[in-house]
Amino acid sequence: MAPYQNEDWRLIYKGHPCYNPEKDLVIPGFKIPSHFDASPLLGAAPAENRHLLLFFRGDCGHNRLPQYSRGIRQKVWNLSRTHEWQTKHNIIIGTRKELTGTEWEQSMQSFTAVFLASS
Image 1 (cartoon, rainbow, N blue to C red):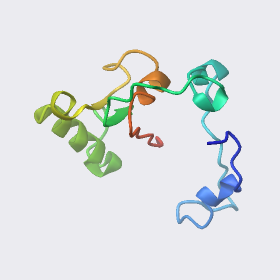
Image 2: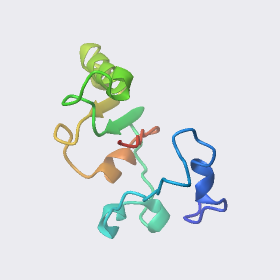
Image 3: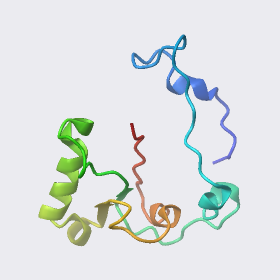
Image 4: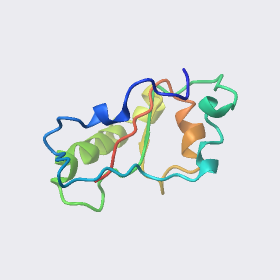
């Protein structure tokens, strides 16, 4: 996988009903360069021990109205706790306060990492 994306990045939102180029400005989220130190795209060694089936670390909607993400984030977080997904299936879902360590290193231990945009 190359660090260069061959396609125009604007294809991601072109034609999306929530984007109006006459009034909307898309500004990517900023991460300081050290945030990506563990990325194999920037020369770090690829993870050899991928033992997690799925990993999500972020806003699980605990301090938001039920309409946030249509309740999906809250529901998935609750299901993961109720049915012990971490113990049974190596699925980790949690907030930034619950899960310590660097997000890149944790996501590189997973076969599937979920990165959701925040509103």
